[in-house]
Image: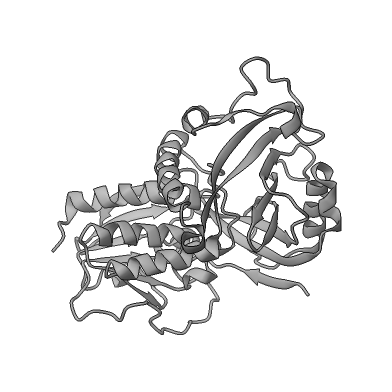
Length: 368
């Protein structure tokens, strides 16, 4: 039986969205002391920002329309690699900080959801790499230079149809497990999570000293910022036929040039992807797209074609021409740190961006 699941935006209300249950879902009951900071959004960006702030001594409350399990983060593939994000220089810096954190968390995979897994990112065009190997992806040279152990892939490490690529051992995160870990860690630091709609940043600022806006795609309405656009991603989960390493390829055979083909071995199954449809708002899996994803993956790993489908996933990546990670003053004078627009790299940059949020908050508000 196929289980279908879709993901929301993790922040402000979308037009036409029914008001959700406002039950507080935090692991700790709200304290009687007012929080210093309200974080809007309970996806991976919001939770990591809240954790870093709480562990630095701030009293933090997260509010979000969607619980963590219902955000785009929950259906992310979980590979730590910069994807669909700008600007490159900052994205690489944030990614390397996150790589450091996830590498530490990978020592406790059952608890944190993070594992270090080997894999290959390949060139389907088969361009010869020469002595120095294939060229890094555009703008990501600093990432390729800094990832420990990254090297040109050997011929035997590449599937048929790929002539060049890079081998690396990088974090692969099981997102449902990781989100639960983040919620527990936030609770241990004294933070709370409340599931309720947030109509405006002014509402979020009521009674607090600072707001951190991690509303993802919801920033279109909450800020408002119409430069935030959805990039729809669809995945297929199948029974793993024995694939132990991740694989990605910028696939010239994909119908959409923005699509990439990838296989990510997770404990719950093999994740097949993917798509990158700009401006698409639907959260319903498309059977024809799913069939095309499986076919693309099977070109490189034929055993995938016979694997039993377990589930379909659709998420809306919150893309923006450039990530917005900056502070401003709301009309009432409250500091608001924006942290949204991470495209397809929210997991990858989460901890690096959270450190930047802490720096911006500290510049304006000291812990009580």
